[in-house]
Amino acid sequence: MEMNQVTLPVKNMEEAVKFYLVLGFIQIVDTPHYARFSCPKGNSTFSLSLELEEFKNGAIIYFETEKLDMLAESLVAKGVIFEQLPTEQRYLWKEAVLKDPSGNKIKLFWAGENRLSPPWKVEKRG
Image 1 (spheres, one colour):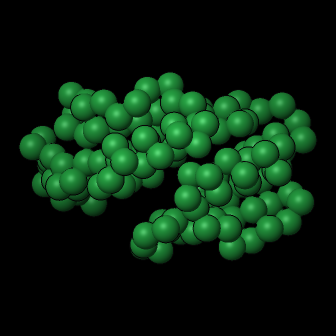
Image 2 (cartoon, rainbow, N blue to C red; image 1 turned 90 degrees about the vertical axis):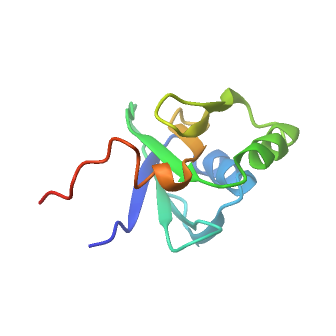
């Protein structure tokens, strides 16, 4: 099995699409109520769904890039506001934190081999 996509709720589709295009994603579906993007690297996709009712999304979406510092610098230059610039974490990942215009939490990160093989990795289960 492979994860196909994650869909995020948004309050304003036009504003959200502009935000994700600035982050560097490639739009592959464009409707007034739904947009889908592919990641610049790999086969992952994610989508946005217009929600007319008030919502609170507690999920966090992670996007990994080896060039995290360069990406964060370029996004700051484009006016993107970060809650946290790239910072080394105790769990051996480097993360930057921001929110999209609808309040969805995003983490841009680099974990290298620690993403799938951290020092505390357990034997395969299931």
